[in-house]
Each structure stands twice: as structure tokens, then as C-alpha cells.
Amino acid sequence: MSVGRLVYYKGVEYLIDAMTGVSGRLLVIGDGPLRPRLERQAIVRNIKDRVVFLGEIQNRDIVPYYHAADVFVLPSVARSEAFGIVQLEAMACGKPVVNTRLDSGVPFVSPHGVTGLTVPPAKPGALADAINLLLCDAERRAEFGKAGRRRVRQEFSLELMARRTRDVYDGVGTVRRESGGNERVRQHACE
Figure (cartoon, rainbow, N blue to C red):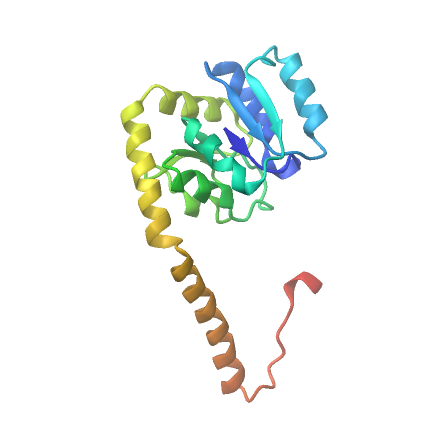
């Protein structure tokens, strides 16, 4: 299973290629400009019957899909995928995650060998190997799933995330007060 907008940085084309070496079914939840191309890719790879595009599903309706899946895959290929909150959703449902080793928060959310497996981006063979390893090992899937639930509770609870956000703002306020309020706050997006 994979969830996300069907855009360039999500890497779904590599996941579809990986599925040629996986004996399983892929549910793709989400929509976007690449959907027609990805659907054609599944036809060309002769796996159209094993790659199901479900389109956009509202957040309140998505949980049963996570529970039905054996593995969650986030095949992102660019730093534009800064965090991958869908990993947390899958982990909260007790699912092991296959993600990619990006220079972003993606591998931090689901660490390799703890809550799932991390592979190099844009490598269909590595994705297929990781997915197959998990599909063939129910015990490992269960261990990663339990660790994922625990990690979500310990590291990403609403209370903890709110406190961390407040601490960042408090830190910025402290720096401004210590500098007499004359320090210019730079907005990286505008540079």
C-alpha cells in the first residue's frame, strides 16, 4: 500500500517497477497529475491486475485500508518529501514501513531496522527486495508494527509535538529578547 499525491517526488513509478518482482497487490491511494502515466506504466509492465489505483480517499475513511495492508511503502525520491506523515498513520495502525534514504525527515520517522526498512531512492530492485522480505516474514512485520506504534506514541504524540513546537517558538522569542528585538528574522522561502 502507498498513500500520497501522485506527483514527481513521491517516486510511485519506481514502486510500480518494483511490483514486477513482488508477488502481491499494490493499493495506490491518492490522485494527481501523474496518475494517467502511472496507470499506463502498470499496463505496460503487465501488472495492471496487481496495481490498483483507488484515487483520493478522505482521511476519515482511510484507516481500514492501512489495517488491511501488510506493508506500507513510501518510495519518495526527492527532498520535497520532507517528513511523510503517512508513515506515522501506517505506523499508528501497526504496519511496517518501507521508505527511502532521503536527506530529509523521512528516514527519521521510520528508522531502518526498527519500524521498517529503508532503501536507496529510485531503486526498484531495492524496493522489491524490502517488500518481499517483509511479505515473507510475518514475525518481522509484527515486530516492526509494534515498534511503529510505540514510536508514534513516544515520539509523535500530539502533546509532545505541541510542546516541541512551543519550545521552538519560545527559543526564537528568547533570541529576539536577548538581542534587544533588533535582529531580523529571515524567511527562507523568500530568499
